[in-house]
Image (cartoon, rainbow, N blue to C red; front, side, top):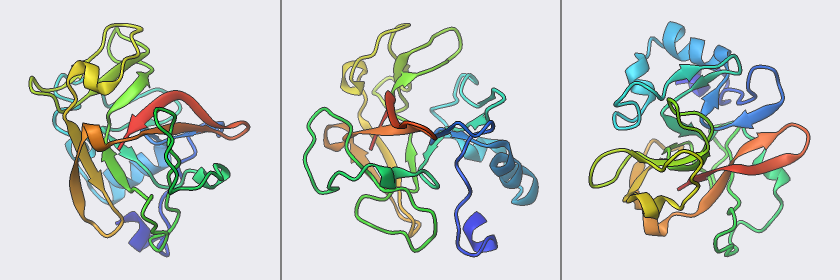
Amino acid sequence: MYAHDNQDKFPIALRNGGTSYHIVWVPDVTFDYFVNQARIQTNCLTCPNKNRDGLWIIHNGQGWRLGFSCGWGVPTEVDTRPRDGSYGLLPWPWDSPKKTSDITPYTILLADIISKGTDVYGTLANITDAPHTLGGPKTSGNGQLVEPEAIGSEGGNVGLIDGSVEWRKQRLMHPRVVLWKVTGGPDATYIGYW
């Protein structure tokens, strides 16, 4: 919706303060557009499992943490590694769309948040979390960075620019860098999976 109102360009992903891009945090101006101009209810900005306990959607001065990974507007092009390579347990490269025509096999628009390195979740910090396990959403213990499979992640939804959404099993997902510093590029302290 935003792109169609903005010459086919997606929102900027640079967080308030201008020091980093983080696909889970959107700047105030983007959140304000969604809520005030597009009139999207905030419960539409998260996977129902992700915010079940009300601890996920928060504002911290750098932006709003939504319940989806928002893959647009991130300078992923600074990672010049081949997209069709195999990187094992290292973060795999991906493509972030800036416009609706930026489509490659490695582009995502949205994804369920399955992450390792979540900064704050209630009283927990530096954890792994997954919205879809047999018992519902789960997190690791405080300061425990484990692979999502260790807490029972079954997978998540991945949304593409064409509007399609596919369920991807956890065992088929790859780790991806979701935090990009303006100076310094990719920062692997926070990893997403899709």
